[in-house]
Every structure is written in structure tokens, then in C-alpha cells.
Length: 117
Ligand SMILES: [Zn+2]
Image 1 (cartoon, rainbow, N blue to C red):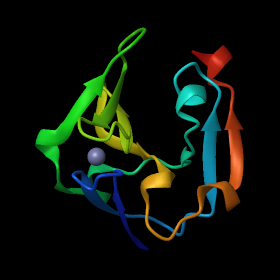
Image 2 (spheres, rainbow, N blue to C red; image 1 turned 90 degrees about the vertical axis):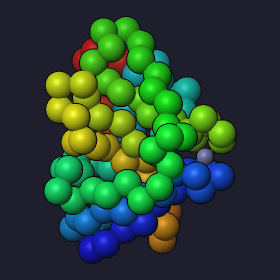
Image 3 (cartoon, rainbow, N blue to C red; image 1 turned 120 degrees about the vertical axis):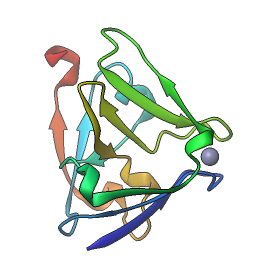
């Protein structure tokens, strides 16, 4: 399947290919719980992902061990995807940013990031 996504103000637009998305991942770590984010369960690899626009509008938030690049839009503040500094370009996608997906209606897998990190 081919998916399209964008942040709230649409400055950041991207496309990716993956199997049909039927599941989401919800993590309870200190940042995910604040974002109330539902992410792609699978990582999207660099070969499956294309940033269409908005590279200059992306900012990065680092915290804790700084292992994760929490990208967000400088204009609207939405975080459309993140990757790890040691695996650049291997993204989990914020499914709330993706067209034709209703994240809260997916099968949600819970990840205990609060205790895993
Ligand atoms: Zn934006």
C-alpha cells in the first residue's frame, strides 16, 4: 500500500509504502503519553519512505539519552515521525498524520516504554 501523510499545517508532507496498516503502537513513556500518539507498529525503512516537502520546517527534540530524534514541525508543533540516532531514516510514523487511517480504530499494541527505557 502507498500512504500519504502530513503535519497539521501541511508544511511537512511525506509518503511511504508498507503492508496495509491494521495495527498501531501506543507507548506509555513520558513523551508518548504527553503526545497521546499512536505510532506505526512496524518501522518504515528508508527505501519505503519519501519526504515530499518540509525538510526546512523540521526541528528535532532530544531528551534523556538522546537516542531518539523526535521530529516536529516548527509551525504547527506536530510530530509526524521519529527515528533513532543509530538507525537514521528508519521511522515510526505518527498514524494520526496519515490519510485514510483512523488510529483509534486500529488494533492497538501497548508498549511499556515507561519501564523499558
Ligand atoms: Zn506543520
